[in-house]
Amino acid sequence: MKNLSTSIAIISLTILISCQDKPVSKGYLINGIAKNVPDSTQVLLYLYPKMDVIADSAIVLNEEFQFKGNVSRPTLAHLRIIESRDDRTFWLENKEIDFVGQEGSFSEGKVSGSNTQKESELLLERKDSIFKEMGKLEAMVTKENRDSLFVFYEQMQYVVIDINKGFIKDYPNSYESLTQLNWSKEMMGSEETEQIFSQINEKLRSTEEGKPM
Image 1 (cartoon, one colour):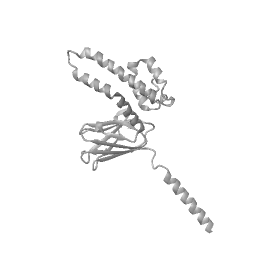
Image 2: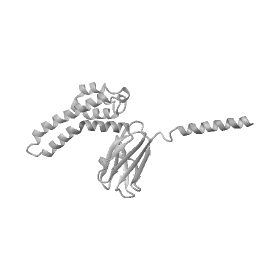
Image 3: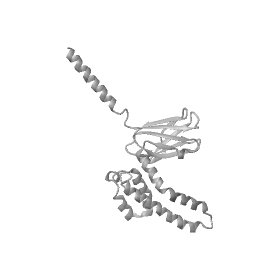
Image 4: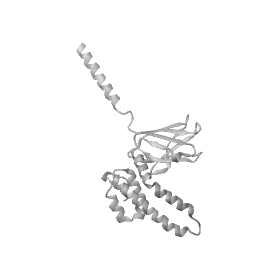
């Protein structure tokens, strides 16, 4: 009888340890900090491709808000506060994601916990200098010089595409690569798009975003 009790205790302990090792949730958890945002402010969450449909909403309390859910794969998400016109787009994955933003500058908020978001930010770093040059050119535009400056601006856009192509080569397994190719395909043309598309991971090529290409 004593041996039976001991065996039951060991089995129970093993089950308990096994349960503790398993994650509580397989979905995502967004922990948001919204500095200077008043209590009861509503934060809206949108998920690509349905960026005009509210996927979820949360209320700010003590400058904090939270979202829980599940996505089948890395997905572009968009946070928005209607009252202050604050928003932030980032890559959402089934992980614990931390967001820190401030009223009036949500678009500059820091996102951590998403590998795809980290890859996206690496690409932005590569484009930083050309984006600055494009911004300077945009500031120079007038009715008189618009057509002539557009020629230079278009050349800069091809520089951006070349940066995208280099990124795709370096990160063929990234959803950011697939997204950038999708946005660049019209300027690249079908032949070059097909060539670059072949460099992307086969699994990504078979996704909903990849099939049209």
